[in-house]
Image (tube, rainbow, N blue to C red; front, side, top):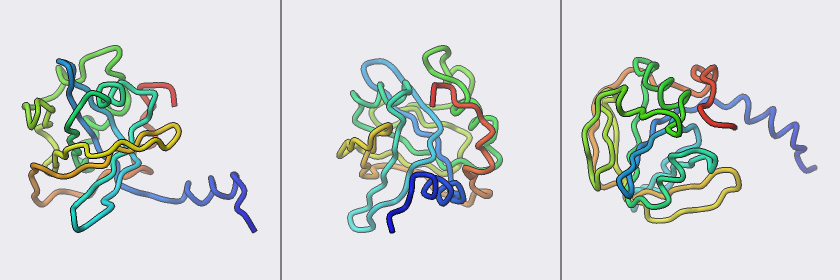
Length: 163
């Protein structure tokens, strides 16, 4: 028996997964946003899939980018998650409100999250209202971090752009 759209929505509403902040840069512009659709998709070679809403500025900037950085957001990074999830780069420069440094290909690396990696964008995949960016990790930082901020703990953040 095929699942109805309503039953599918009920099942996936029960999922709880980590959220991430992604940043990118292209043609003199930088952008970043909070994402919930992301996962490691291969071990050999290492690959990660980050999905961006096609309605937000980060997606538009990423179309000309070679690199995307994925920041692993902890519960300690709630203010940063609210900035990158609740504000739109169309209206303000998020990077003026946080500490960061330039990374590979000029992509912003945020100072607060302890764990991050930059990945070369090796493929772009159309998923409807999201675009998947397949990443080949090229640089990063890993360390012990507090618990990950999850979708259910962050869903009160009003999106900075139309859903």
